[in-house]
Image 1 (cartoon, rainbow, N blue to C red):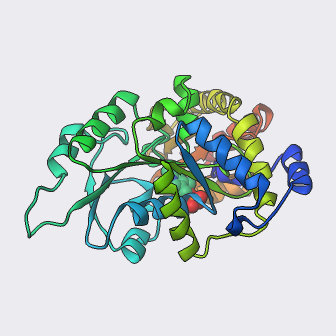
Image 2: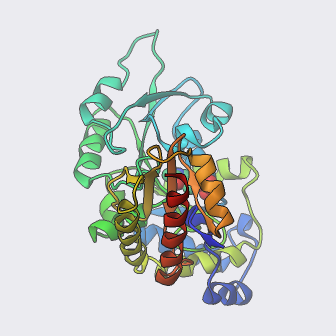
Amino acid sequence: MIDLRSDTVTKPTEAMRKAAYEADVGDDVYGEDPSINQLEETAAEVLGKEAALFVTSGTQGNQIAILTHCRPGNEIILEAESHIFYYESGASSAFAGVQTRTLNGTRGAMNPSDVEYAIRGEDQHFPETGLICLENTHNRAGGAVIPTDNMKEIHKIAKANNVPVHIDGARLFNAAAALNLPASEFAKHCDTVQVCLSKGLGAPVGSILAGNRDFITAARKWRKRLGGGLRQAGILAAPGLIALTQMRERLAEDHENAQYLAQQLGQIKGIEIVNQVDTNIIVADVKKLKTNSSEFVEKLKAEGVLSGTFGPSYVRFVTHYDVNRNQLEQAITAIQKIADQVI
Ligand SMILES: *Cc1c(COP(=O)(O)O)cnc(C)c1O
């Protein structure tokens, strides 16, 4: 199977498996796991923040951020197609008790003046704005890179209004690779940031939540409350450290493969690429074919290629290190075959 459903499907590399096996471990709830400590220190440095916390998933990292920044009855401002709103099972209302104020963005980027307008003034009728969430790269916008200028402007407005900013940076390193900037150049435009180790970076488990020291102390408690206090977690941290230190550089390769795939698919009759491919995500529209996305995905699966539906006629393909150029060629041939069948 050639798996282009997501970059979450990447399997840990040989070096990661070896590192997990050899990891120095201790009880992380006591703060005594050397591998976790090393990962958290390295992550804080890479992101340009005072401190960092290893969390079990991107969703957990985002939700801990909301829980730590907000109180029940607060409102959070976020883009209408953001992961936190769209894909986290309503966790922000279920756990943090906040209400969401969604703004339609352009390629995932909220308009700073819309954000400014959405921040609540003082009035007994109003919820307080507890947090602004950005997402970079933006998943549902097809892996779009949110420009640093946009982030900077929103952060400035947020600061002027005393509202913190959180970045859902599940794929922040893809944004960094795309613009050839250090991740800290993005993270400096926020108070807190979550990055996934288990997507394109290939670690088996885990995310990082970073921010200032006081924030991370409070976040650690929320992690414990949620049952996310792990013991000999160095087994997970060691591959995570490899992800963070050795796997970022090669993301550009995934982006080149995505460009190639988009260019090839764009030439197939009846298929239209709908996103500007900034990073490793391609969204193809199959509505000009006599099929819908679920059927297309099923047929493609029978040909040994996995993809995902992304709307009634949209199919998503994600490139990553577990699919090489040769496999990509095979995938293109299979997609061409299906398209020819249903034209
Ligand atoms: C994948 C992803 C997450 C978190 O995913 P988990 O599966 O919980 O690790 C958060 N935000 C975005 C934008 C994502 O793509």
